[in-house]
Length: 525
Ligand code: GLU
Image: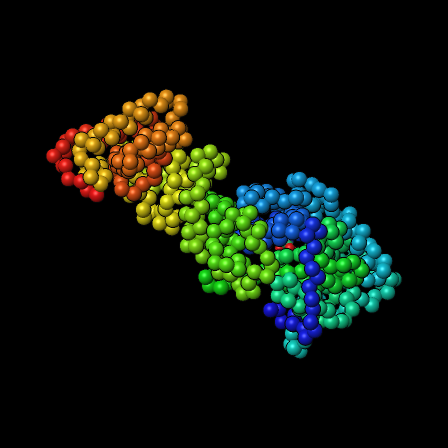
């Protein structure tokens, strides 16, 4: 809790949420990559909007020219798109309240600043940074609240004219009347603050350069935003924004502040803790569905103990009452767990979606193979890594990659050593296995090379396997023939990646191994 914000005694009843009338926004400043905290705020706003048939807006707050960069806007846009959090209005797509980039809305802010000046609700302040620093120090020493002394609030129009004609640097401040105000935080309940702790806040550097709090209030009003749902790090801005809205005699939206995402050391999640941006996770190969599910449960609890949610299920289950009050701790292991769950259900992704290949992960896998396998051609290694990347993600927690990648996936980079005893399934004998491998060889050989793709391979293998009373009689020896391992992706998955020729070679090789060890009739399982 911010010290000057307190819980009031009076009972406040929040206004009802009106379906079809909700307008929420995410308003990132393009001063860095899309932070996971911002992504989570975007997700909660998105869920809130969709749940109540509302509108989700993306506004870019780039009034801080020095720190803003179009490359970060691109990162934000791409990150939200990758997560599947499409907006209904905003940058890149436009909408009724366009433009949605603050740097293109300056004329609007100027109009409001002009109005406040004319109404004498705002005034020019000529105090230098040095004077202000001294003033603050004095207040601090005297144990007083730090706020502007209002020295320039009493300047006459002649004095102002003189200072301005001398080119003295100035800013615009808002005259804030002393009073107590309460706002109803939709997550934390009613919060009261006294404006005398704010002082006359700065609202613009000049008539065409508004500061964040001012531009945000104008935009939220002009864009008819009904709810501002954002991270708790903005809670100290809320009293200022309410004061600005009151000066303009416009209605403030409702507010709600989410708890922060914290690292294990309980400080705000940052680069120091490892991955802190959506792009970091994307590069590491996490699936967007897993990131969404994980972010949703960071700070929000469904009423039951479900853990796996699709975006649609989240919309259905979401409510602001489910948002917790304390900070949410980031746990990479949990994200790994979600990722594995989603990988198991997203075969389509590694089949079709070559666009979303996690390139950094592929590079990393390539380097692990190169370290272990000297002979292979580097182009082949890289290509194969990109072919298997989603299989890897599905089966191996990323944190175990370095340790287990080669032992689990090394067979993709060279013929596996086949231990003949592994080929046995239940009570099958050598003749049965040889026959099973021969049969499947003939079936796969018939697939034309240009039709060698997973759907067809799977259909052929399973169609054949279903004819036996136990599919394992086909699938098991085939898996061992292709991978040499008891635990591996499905044989159709492996075959589709190995290609026709190599698949057939491996089956032939397994038959030979079996011949060499023909004496071994003992079933293993
Ligand atoms: N531009 C602010 C930020 O990036 C947005 C704050 C808000 O949602 O009002 O943190």
